[in-house]
Image (tube, rainbow, N blue to C red):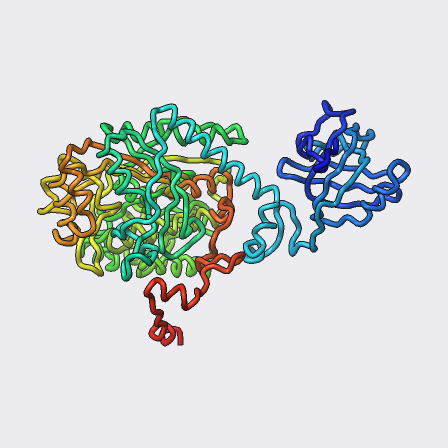
Length: 601
C-alpha cells in the first residue's frame, strides 16, 4: 500500500461499513478526538465524508502506539490498518461508521496543528466574528461542509434540468458599464483609460437580453453579482444568482419552468418527507398587501390584516375617522391568545409599530363580556360588537389597529404580524411555503426625488392593456413581473421584458431618464432593439437565499464559503485594505478623506 511516493489513500473515512470488515485500508484525515483508555489509544479520524474510529494497540504496534501518544486535535494523519467489527456493546449508533473500527498497523503524521480557537464540531458556541476570522477552520465543521455540499448538488441539479430543457450556459462580462439598477455599483478604475471606470455587474440583465437579440433563445448562468448596499442576514455584497432568459415566452411559461427548477433542486437535496408540488399559489401584489401588508408574505401562519376603513369613517374616534377623511386606511390584526399581555408588553408593541412610521397602535382586548379598551368610550355597543365580529374575536384575543396612509398601515401591520408570530411561536419551522406574487405596479413614486422610479428595473414590460396610461396615469400601470417568495423571503424575481425601442424610450421618460442619458447609458441596447428583437422574459433565483432557507440556516453567511461581515469586511483576509501609492498612481487616483473624516468626528 506504500509506493515510492508514499501512502495512497484507499478509502474515505465516512464510507467504511460492515462490508469492509477484513479489508486493509489507508485513510487520511484530521484527528477529531484522541482518547487514551489505559492501554489502547482511540483516534477519531475525520474527513469531509465523516468520522471513523481508529485503534492503536501497543501489544501489536509498539512504535505506532508511541507516535499516536503525541497526536493532538486537528493533526493531519495517514493511517494503515484493518477494518474490524467493533466489540459487542461498543457500537456507536450516532455514527454511520459506528459498527466498525480500524485496527492501525501504521501511522504517519502528515502535519501538526495548533489548538484551534474553537471546537471543530457542529453547533459550536462561539462568536460569529471568530468563526469568520478563522473561516478555514469553521469550514472543517461537518454542518458547514454539508451546507456547501447541498449548494453544490443544488447547482448541479439546476444545470442538469436547464440543460434538459434546451438552455445553454453562457458567461457574461464581469467588467461592464455602470447603469442605474437600484443599488450602488462597485466601481473598478481602468488603468488603460484614465478617469474611466468599469462596474461590477449587479446582474447580467442587459447582456442576457442582448443574448436574446442574438438568437440564443435559451440562456442560463450561475452568475456572480455585486451590489454596494447595506447588508443584513440575507444579503451580501457579492452573491450568486441562477440567472436565465427565454425568447418567445409569456409569464406562465417562465413560472412553470422556475417551479420545476426549484423542485429539481429540492428533490436533489431533500432530507425530509416534505414534498414540493407545483403549481405554487399565486397572489396579486394588491391582494398580498391587503391581506399580509407585504409583497413577500409569509403564509405559514394566519394573523391576516382585517380592513376596518369603512366602519372607521363614521366612528366617534377621531384618530380613525380623520385618517379615513384624508385618504388613509384603518386596518388591524387579531393577535390570537395575546389578550393576557401586560400593559408594558403592549407598549413595546406600540413602540415597535412606531419604528415603521405608525403614529401609534390602538388596541382592544376580547373578553367574555365583550371588547375592553381605553377607547371604548368612543364606540357604541353596536360598533364594538361589529368590530368583534369582523375580527372573529374570541375570549383572550388582542386586536391591534393602525390608522394612517395605506403604505404606513401595510408596513407597520405587516411587520407587527411577523413580530407577534415570532414572539408567540406561531411560525412552523419545518414548512416550505412557496408562492408567486404577480401584477406588481410598474412604477412607484419616490417622495424624496419627487418622481417615479421602476419598481423592479426599467426593462420590465408594462401589461399590454395598461401601456396607454404610461404617460397619463403612471401609478395605475401594472408590470409583467413576478416574484417567487418562500417563507416570507423573496428568493427570486423576473419579468417579461420590453423588446421594442419606442416602448423602452417611453419607459425611460416615465422614470425621468432623458434621451441624452438613455443614449449614453443604454444606447447599445436601444440600437439592438432596432434589429429584430424577439419577445423575451426571464428570471433570477437568489441562489444563496434559497439554499439558506432549504437548509434551515438563519443567515446566508452560513451557505457562502467566504462571506463578508455586516460592514462588508472579510475578517480572514483583511479586505478591504489600503493599497500602495504606486498602485493609485497607475490608476490616476488621488484619495481625499478630509470630508469623510470630519463627518466621523
